[in-house]
Image 1: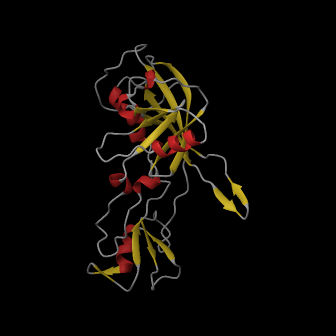
Image 2: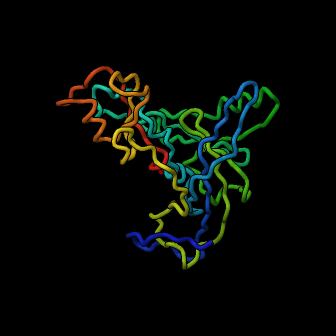
Image 3: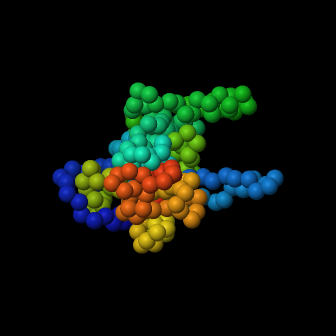
Length: 252
């Protein structure tokens, strides 16, 4: 697979045949729900491919996996729309599960070992033992991998994604040779945006709940419609709760 990437600025510091390229498929969060007495587990939905270098560490891949749950605002911002504390700024823990090893992110002092409760449960059921390692200290070339086999990335508590390594080969002269450009997106599945319910032109940026002036309980607004409809001279009109909305189609 030849990598295609727009030319980016940077010093060519990679030499052909001296590093490894891995292509990683990333999928949407795993959805499991009940329908009556039946448990439904739809097949995973592909999001995008990422190219990483063998010399890079797992945390560099994690930083390139953007999920809408990372961008969700942790509290209402009705009285002060400028205040937006994102979940990823507070809940920074996460892990990759690859071939019996939990690779935890410990770059921040308050990060938790999400895998601990899983390992304890498995031990009680006579499964394991499972090993742990530090994500930011582990390079891709140090991993034992199976091509085409699903592995797990978990963050924000219970948000789980399948990831899959679909290609591993030596870097060659036709590849981008600037290390700072990696990881980068190879292929992205475009999705339909959730449009503003007022102008029906722009992507929704806000959602209001219990708004006494709207025709539906949850109403989606673009930035301009949200401010012009719900505020006058920066003061809210009527009663409602407002939350920042990040559309899946624009979060990469």
